[in-house]
Length: 281
Image 1 (tube, helix red, strand yellow):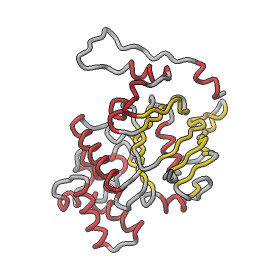
Image 2 (tube, rainbow, N blue to C red):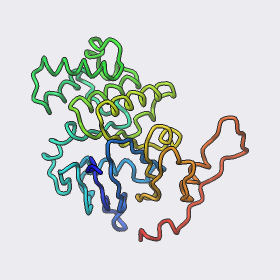
Image 3 (tube, one colour):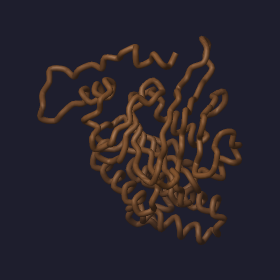
Image 4 (tube, rainbow, N blue to C red):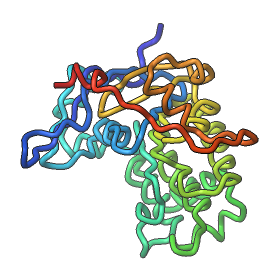
């Protein structure tokens, strides 16, 4: 078996609180190869914080601890901000939820993509512009020359998300973390964005971590799924067999999903068991 692209063992993220430390992520462990890994769970379960911890984006006073946190041969534990800046974009990248808040409003989208290329690959302005146009075309944007000159407020939500994907992938990272990349999009555009991600990940041999609350989406798109609750991983499943999950929490999430063509007076409520937290005291 080849070495994983990413190895995470007993990752924890802790924030100080008025009544003591708050553990947002608790002893999370997984590996990522050249595959599509989904992380699902309710809001506040620690999904996004896990992704930000891997990227070194947990700010002070948050604390990151892990027995192992390795990107290839690089140990991420204790890596300086300067060291993370070298890695972000070129070896690992993250697409955040809403491009409107991630893009610089006073720069054209093309300039922002080209800036990423110049920063990581030390390319000329001409080469960076050509690479940005090629990347816009790769994410299926029509008329990339025109879109290159547009500003973030001039693009739609779906186009903005494609621009973010282009920006994150232009330096050729090995891993992409996509945090709710389709949550603000309609169903048709969601499908298009996921198809683009799938095409790029497969063609480049990348690893993808897809963070989502949409169980249907993750089960149909990913290879494996981590189910998180209260900062911990409760269950790991083969995505195609998510409907056969064993843990009561996962079963409860699945049961709460509405089903087309199946009328119910009310959706069942998820019944949480205090025993799930027993090992977290």
